[in-house]
Image (tube, rainbow over all chains, first blue to last red; front, side, top):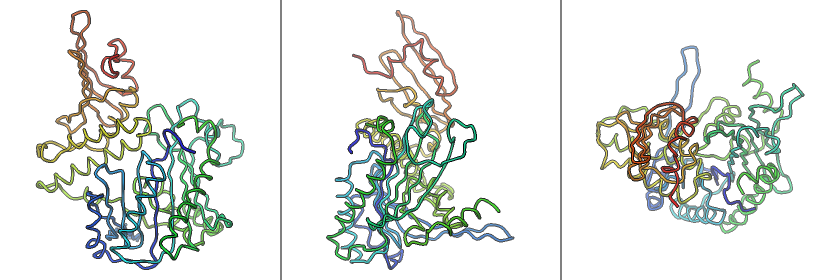
Length: 236
Length: 208
């Protein structure tokens, strides 16, 4: 379903490599992406060690985060993954998908054909609900079930569920939570859908388009079933 | 048994051993929620957001100023992006152009403090709370706070955006040939009410 003001705050497509790329290679070969992504930052992993002497952290460079001039389009090339994401406003599937394939093609040209262990598609949606109508059950169908403690709603919550859709050959991590709203006089609900495939990944590059289209259809179905008609009125 | 131990236990009960379920698809701007869940799932390993290392370094010289301004522009735009569904694409593009112009390294006085995320957040919440149709002119105060200014002929409203939804404002409003001036400070949630007697539509809405 097309919405006039989609509540998507971030959309992500990520492919995970079966073999790592070393950081120096990423830095050397990513220069050609500069035309579309002039901004560059390093991505770090921080590994913490806890002992009686205290907490020690070590940061390790794991890749580059490239972004467009307006900062809305992001490309992350890490040792073990390629990630294309778009921040709000969501440009629509056709544009987002086309951008992914453009970057995937250039990545293949620069880094060679690779095999993958996982493909993930994640859409983070935030529903901004005016205060006074904050019973989440009016807006979403994914929330914790609690015994009757006498509360009128479940208050704040964060829940996650990971399940397999065997017929689709996909896994799903579905999260919902209340979050502090960036909009005054609102409370916000997040529906975070991560659809992923870890088996039957395309061997041929021209089959990725069909695979991603399929994942997107499943993601849409999950989203539509996770929200109510009342929620649709917020962003239609 | 602490909460983390409970979650780790439930992870073994739930079938999260399936490849791919143990670490979710990344998302650069939504780390907070992700981190909560990832920390629960994987216990100790936390990915630091890009750019955080830069904040740890002391600022010295032009290169560091450029990095600080770039970081400020990025944070500002990401915050605007988060509420873009309430502002509209046209507004967003014009506001981004204003941010680029405001935080341009070539125009920046190196002795001025670079605006932080808190002042940008208050500014965006001000726009939404006041239901603003007309974009304000933007500036930065000596304290490094975003300043929004609306001018309609002799009628002027200037609002300095402080952290935590607080604002400091000053106005000049002409009524029946008389210029009235007022100033104050407080939370943005009260500002519309306080400005009510001055007919704020003169600043926030386009004239018919």
